[in-house]
Image (cartoon, rainbow, N blue to C red; front, side, top):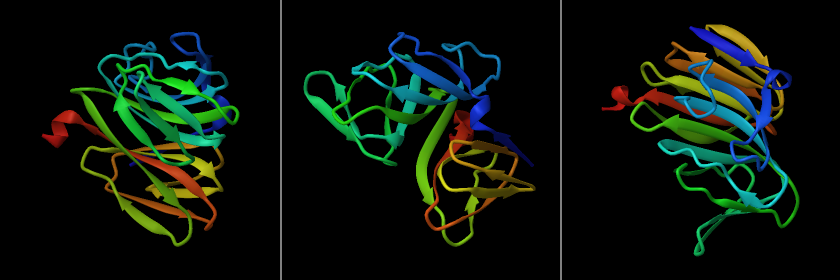
Length: 196
């Protein structure tokens, strides 16, 4: 079992593919993959202006507002989705929705996986009573802290603070403990072959 603690001040900051904003790469797999060749990508994006997201054909994407103001994603001329705090939205990243900021800038946590190789599911966890969360066989568990301080145990024990991320491999159970006002984005990553 291994729990990798990624401190928020170590994230790799770079421009969006389309130049429309800035992002911080949290974790890539393969680790040295270029921005368009990854199989898994976790990132924290700053959305400061209206405009289109980058297109990533062949990538499934889940975006979660983790700081700042709610905003609208426009998919074409007819579909709009209002992004609210800690309400994940999943879509095929070949789409290039445009953001509309009515209330100010925002920060969003992105989980991206290559279709046919990896899958992901994203949920929100809140602090309070300690809990054990199951991890599928050969799955990877990711906890991205939005509020509070989280103790994460999976063999190793680490303490993650706001905007830190913990990536855990080779475990069947993840033990979490945080105060009642804490919140985090919890992601399970699985190789596509393990879900067939």
